[in-house]
Length: 313
Image (cartoon, rainbow, N blue to C red; front, side):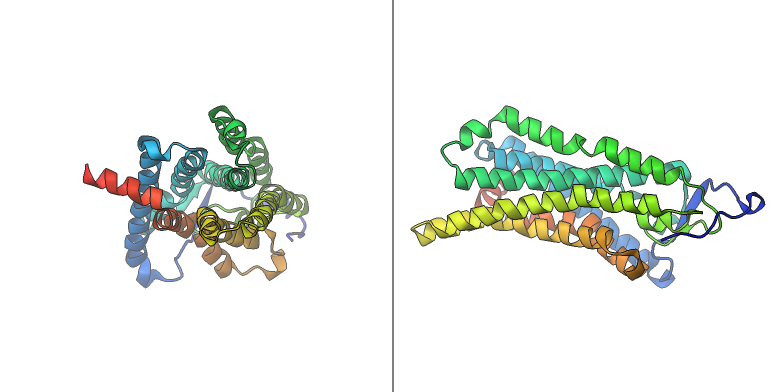
């Protein structure tokens, strides 16, 4: 925790911009990383965009499960676009400065989209729970109006909290180093540059991480524990295999996203390694959005059929 006393006013310099170091410690790989991340960004845009498109166009994919998948794919595009374009610009131009306002905006969007994904993944788990555990009530409970309300709630519930958290962080005085040892404006590296006591801010980070990270994760685990118990009671092995197949893709995405995110935001600061933070951040901000469409398309026969129809047109 940053508990050092406030420096004298004469030594305080108002910070108007930061420097995102990113991968400056490996200068010989800058253009390689630029090319790699550009390819990854294009793959994310095209794959998630394709999932969004086919779930809207194909009549066979007009169910709540694919409605949620379409919105999740759209969220993935927004989430990645909050960090990757700036990182590509920094790698391409080697101008790593970012204004205070742009840094605050980037942090705010990353937090809002991240919170929305956490709750939407929980909604997707609830959808699978209703479909498998209460199939007779499923069409009535998960009607189109309810689905829209669940998506809207998932996307908006975190907005006031995350704006408040961002405002509180950027209301702190910053002095000394302006260098952020990260590839985007994340909470932990920003707090390390703040002057004075940041205990309240760090406690708020943990509280928000528990509410928007652990709570949805525990809801997902609760849903799947009931789903698995129901599946194991099914009389036929074919029925069990089909039920497991509709849930396995979502579970893989949950483990990838929540695993890296929870470790990053809920580890004690004393154990933090800035290099480890960057690697974990790559997982939940870039690699997971790239793998998600592959996981859903390769393990879902309906999506594969819809892709074939789209490609054959």
